[in-house]
Amino acid sequence: MRYSKFSRIEKNCRSQTALTWDVTGLVAGVDEAGRGPLAGPVVAAAVILDDLQPIRGLADSKTLTALRRERLFDEIRAKALCCSIAQASAEEIEQLNILQATLLAMRRAVDGLRLKPNKVLVDGNRLPVLDVLAEAIIKGDALVPAISAASILAKVHRDRWCVEYDRQFPQYGFARHKGYGTAEHIAALRQHGPSPQHRKTFRPVTELMYGLPT
Image (cartoon, rainbow, N blue to C red; front, side):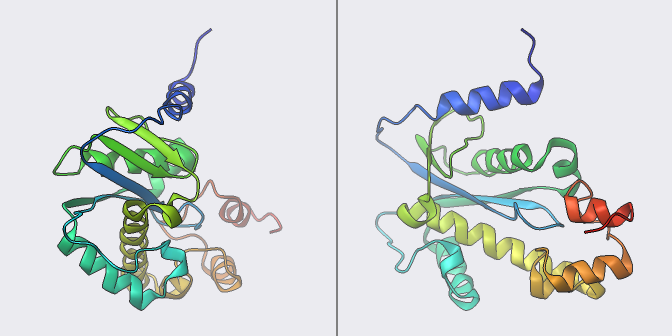
């Protein structure tokens, strides 16, 4: 039976989830931000923490205030052994689909680490294809400090992207809704149409582009 490229990727991802034994050495945590929004890139981060420089208050980024995330962002960058932030663009999301684009961003984040980890722990139930041992951990952003740190880096980086993009296209309100499909955002889409960074394969954007009821 022949498989498409994406079928092979998903098959590899499923097979990697069985690799649950422990190894010694450096462990990287990986998480993403931006799967749900209607516009912009999906961002992933990978972090290897330093046991000799603990960081207090690490948690799932969604449970933290914006100010606390910003402060932890700087502390993680200063104290981690190494960290990497990567993304997949809105165009890549349209080409690949959001799941495959997310896995691509995660792989890029791991590949961007200055130090090669012996094991990678990823938030969720799917894994990118990597050349190191990897394990998916559901709700890992609340359970594993390195994944919590990665969730904070990814969230802050993407929020900053939204603020910057808001300066170019203030009519959409990206600085406030961060690209999510709020009533304000949908109303702006109806009035102005999609911006260059809107994900045209996402249903609300597609429906508005073709004049369908939302």
